[in-house]
Length: 163
Image: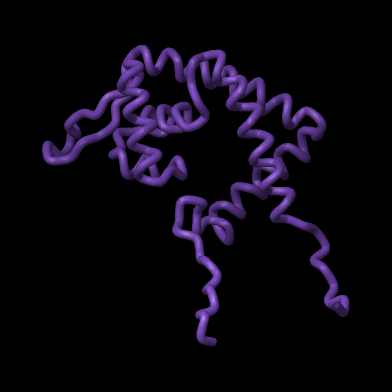
């Protein structure tokens, strides 16, 4: 088979971003386990605690599909960390509310997450840390904003048997 003469990209950005994401999630997950949270539960509590939001709004902000969001919220309710309530502004709408115990656990999670993030970024100088975070915010707010990992994936078409 002949080798392609095409020049590869200057960097395998997909690998770098995936590796960084998976490694951070693994480290954060292990650390949050000490406070009794998964990364998903932590993220849902955080987004629910920031403002009065619906389950759908939180799922979008947390990058969770509907099924995963329901399972995560069910676990948080069972643990007494969150509950579904009627919205304070629209009696027809339901929102996710963090319980006092949920807020206590979330704040412990903030401390744990800060330690993990500080450890991950330790090899970078202050200026490089700032530049990395600003660049990621710019990319995820722009060209890498959509589709998220919760969007349906395009599949290759399978050739038909006839042709």
